[in-house]
Image (cartoon, rainbow, N blue to C red; front, side, top):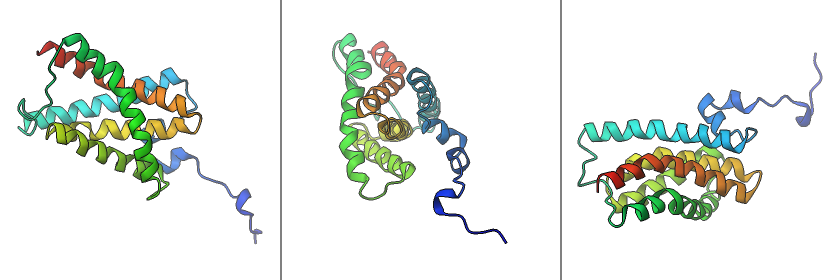
Length: 177
């Protein structure tokens, strides 16, 4: 009969075995910041574009229900790609902090944050929330992952992932004016 092990001696499963491959990549801050931004940017962008295309094909997201941006095209692009992401990331911090009183588990915490952001974006344009729920899940995961290393690093990386997400839609918004 094998003697009981202390809690400290018990084997703890690696995060990769507890989470799926996609989530493991989102919660891995052992890679370079640039590599993480590109990886998380793709994880955010590709599914969100599929969601938007499905919503558009089904008639849920139409021009009337999509967000409208008015003003100088260069200013719009700068706001959407450069200014907006850090502001929304900084606003995400107190939201995640308040939600952390409900759960400390990262995935549910990121999911709740994404729902709050989806509702807030839906107030501007009804179908917009459906298109941004996945990216904000990714942004929340990004912040939670990099916050373990540094607050400002988490802000920077999450803002960069968000900027990458907004780049093509920002170009499209400017081009269709």
